[in-house]
Structure formats: structure tokens, C-alpha cells
Image (cartoon, rainbow, N blue to C red; front, side):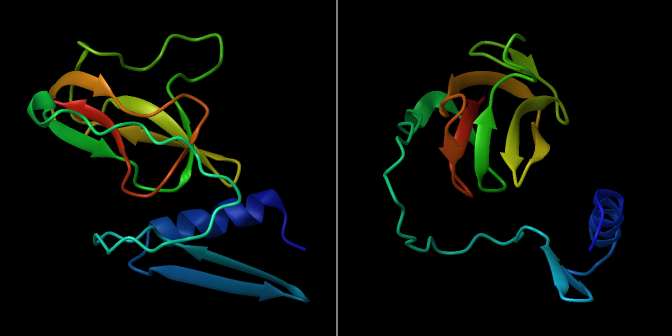
Length: 139
């Protein structure tokens, strides 16, 4: 059985390598880790038990979208009692954390890819977001 530290080490090994996937087996337990795809692929229809509400796209003049790099639960703030990382009108710099996406109990900080001003928040706190779904508009 793998312990959490061993899994964290495997995750770090994968992240710091040029590999796209890593699979390790110990006795009858197999762990497979994959990096998110870098290329944009055509959307694939996946049946869902219940449709989740999807935020409306930003108006065309709202600017460039900051999209979800992974599937997971969107959190606008670091904790339920905290202020959101960003809100409409806030200026951000490249690398600033704009939200968290929880995937498989891992909290992934999502960063702004460029300097600008947040013109729209397109995701709902605590809701599931899909890969490539617009989270924010930035101008």
C-alpha cells in the first residue's frame, strides 16, 4: 500500500519530468498519475448524473478568458471565511492566484497568465468546473 508521502513524491517526480504519465504498482495496488493535456482538444461528451449549472460566457468586450486547466470544484477564496482572491475590477499580475480548483482532494492554485483587470467572474463558488471552462474574463 502506498502512503501519502510516497504518492506526493511520485507526483513531484512526474511534475518535474518530461513524462506525461507515470504508473507504479506495489503488490496489488496500482497508482497512475497523468499530467493535464497541454493541447486544446475537441470537447468530448461525458454523461453526467445531473446537469451542473454553467456560468454564462463573458460578453465579447469583457476581454480574454482565464480557463480551468483541470476538472474540479471551483473555490473563489482560500477558505469559507476569507475574501475571494479576485473580484470584478481587481487588477492582477501574471502569476497572481485567482482561485483554487480542488481535484481528487488536492487544492490547485490557478494563476493569472497575464497582467490585467478582472472584468467578469464566470464560475460559481463551490460548483464543479470542466476542463477549458472560462472562470474569469481579464482585460
